[in-house]
Length: 433
Image (cartoon, rainbow, N blue to C red; front, top):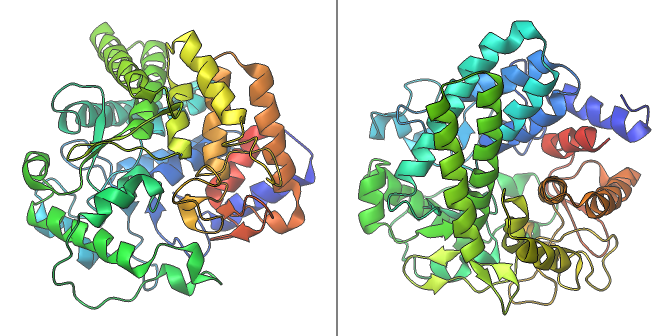
């Protein structure tokens, strides 16, 4: 293990945010369990305690719905006031598939869990194999849900119903689609996030939040039923980043299945899902923007320049020419090579393009967790030198004492933004070190 002070500080953040069987994403802003946060957290915890890392996933998947979906929030009954609270989601009251307890949201997040399970299996002792197998079976059901309910046409693209499902909540990726959402009557509400940041400009606007909540109202009216939603819901996007993560994770889960000596049919199914989504994301590459583009089911390709367009670097079986083009784009003037960046890391939106805002959530700031994904992807592509360069740039950024394991950081000044002592930032720092 590293003796570097940054490593020790990261471990300390994880210990302070540990609530026993799971880890809160941040001390105050995020008091519940978030789906892909816990997966990233488990990757870091695997270096410290494989049992505790496995417990992180076990706790999350204990809230899995009857159809295999993993909710994006599992609510902590001991947390204080939070909005939107379980009552707003009404998951158990609305859908027979939702667990009666614990309370959950009705949305999902990108499926990075197999990457965590693979990392845990690599370091686990033999006595954990039974527990790992039980989690594997739940992750397989999660992938089956995604490959069927979220890809009914077997296109390889996963469809999201809400910006929150993408994990990149207020990205310019969603601007045009959100503008088409006509908000009906909403009850009065008080946002939780604005109480925990110094500058409200860092967070989504009230107009965006109204649309977020109205989409939830529509999903509740549809009883969170995928077939119903896909007939009439106004926000449906084939998400290239989620689809690429699914391809990578299905490949990883097939490796876990092989190690666990699961039936060959399961392994072949996982590889088939991986290949299908990999080919789909590669087909979404736009040669003019040199990015993979989301597809709005109502309006066509989403022509914006955000970090999500670099998603092909996560893909197994990526075409070599496309790999090289995506790598040049990552390190080029639109992203890590942009002018005036404090460090050569990947900002969430290409500076100077429509929608870019340096301080606002997913509209411009640097997210260490996304940079970790790109580092992971570069390594999968055999680009060790490029991966090392991106890793070192991110570590230099995080070594600044004021960085404080921030949720995201201003790309030109490196000012920490959002929540400090963010668990996934700390966990992935542990993994990098």
